[in-house]
Image 1 (cartoon, rainbow, N blue to C red):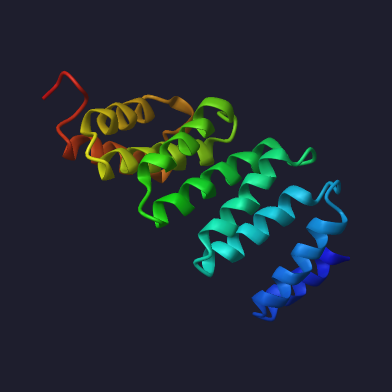
Image 2 (image 1 turned 30 degrees about the horizontal axis):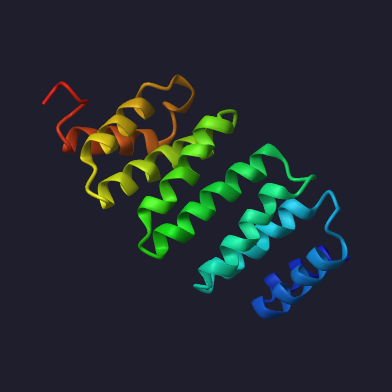
Length: 167
């Protein structure tokens, strides 16, 4: 019921009311099979508000929720990294992105996004060798070739001088 009420409030554009229902859901039904999805929704709402610390707490709660799926955990890792990127903390974001392609390789969409954002984070901290290695590795993975992030990674790799050893 709490998840349905939160969804209604989201449709009405009443994000605070939705957050209230999601918080109540989290408090009263934490063992629910819907916990991962509800925590992701809560985190995204908080992130959209610019409340990055609380959003990160919601995303990190997905990682410990017993009922959260692998895909939900990959998504939570990605958005945890995104909160850190939004706070100009790319060095802290990198491990979250990397955990996706190391631990959740099954979810190609999240793997491609994580590789690309990891490369961007390395660029932001001026570690161009690591950025190039990341983009190069990403462009070699067969399971993500059709995804737009791979083309973006290929373009960034070329803009940075190509793979290590080619410049």
